[in-house]
Image (cartoon, rainbow, N blue to C red):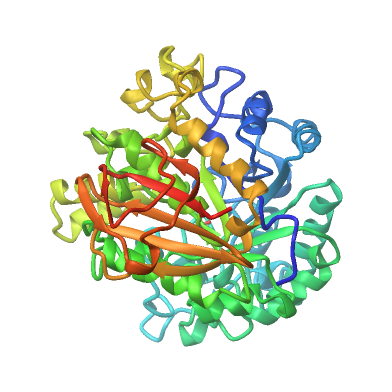
Length: 546
Ligand code: NOJ
């Protein structure tokens, strides 16, 4: 496999609205991020995925962009953005900009022009259809944020498509002028010295609207390849495509080196496992290790020799990792460390979502008014109108709502967790007095230092980056274990995914193995006996026989 500079890097995702507020307006900002670069450098990460900071009316917290080449006033200015890029680079950190080009904001000048008349030159930048024969919407396509995916424009008597909010009209990727505009914009960002792009819902840009094929349309890969050639392909950028629809076979198309498309995709198989078939994320299924193992193994195996995996447990659209896959109570610290070890010891590029490194947890606001996320708010209304109870929807929001990940970063135990001196745009998780960065920095045994160690290990041990993934103890219902093998080196990774004390019988051929414990969340282990007693959520990685 051709080696790339970002293979051993770790990405840290920043959701700017919730990271650090420098001016007391209650909203995180670019200067706030700059003030925390030393912290990120100490953690050891080399890439920041920066969720959108562009100018936006903030209907979807910045995923609705009205100017791709300006910065939202609440986040700062272009000069500050350039300073962030430069100051990060001095610390060997590169910025991945969030490329949101499936749709724009309805306040984007292209859309404002498009609304003016059917023959406006920008009309075709968006997707318009005449009403159906009965005068209603062109088809029954439903928006991901609730309601119809079509919005009626009185003036022209036509509908426009929006897969997300009504204020996020979809761009028309069948129009070559759209390609030209987007490519030129991307090149201007690359010229500013960014490290690459995270590509929002990139699997939707090839949509075949009339066939109602939204994800994975027939032109998708041609469009991405064309984008690669016209923009980032010439350099050394990292590109990660968000692709909810991707199968392992699709991922090979996106990230196979000879394909000249993307570095890797973000896929969500391990997340969707625990959603209800009908009610989706709003009815959470309990975590179940067997299916989780099967999914991770499937992806590790399929992308073993070609393509590249993104590794993540959480992001700004998902619940907190420790709440979903670990234990937020008694074993919060142990389980957060176990999850961290598991993530960093798989093959691929790990992503840490802000706050994960201190074990931040989900939040449980009691009233819907405390929520800010457009998706939770819209779907709450929609499902209640359909007869779902308030209690059931609140349960769904508590388990899987996006605001779980969007509460302010917990920096210290001062009011509002040191995130702002003003009133935060969303209430701070009340557990900040106990869970915060200052406390984690002061505690040598904290989750934070565990993450820091893992990030460093990936730089030190090629087996962690390039070693083959080989499952062991496959049928074990409580333990997820695997080997990584590179040349003569073998790394054994054992994770107890439960709160129970377990006696683990070691497979015969591994019984005498011994070596160097690279990381553990209890006392380090340097040898395997016939069986070992595992503590709740115990995990360790053993480098065999060096
Ligand atoms: C995926 C983003 O991660 C999410 O936050 C956003 O709402 C949608 N795409 C629409 O841009």
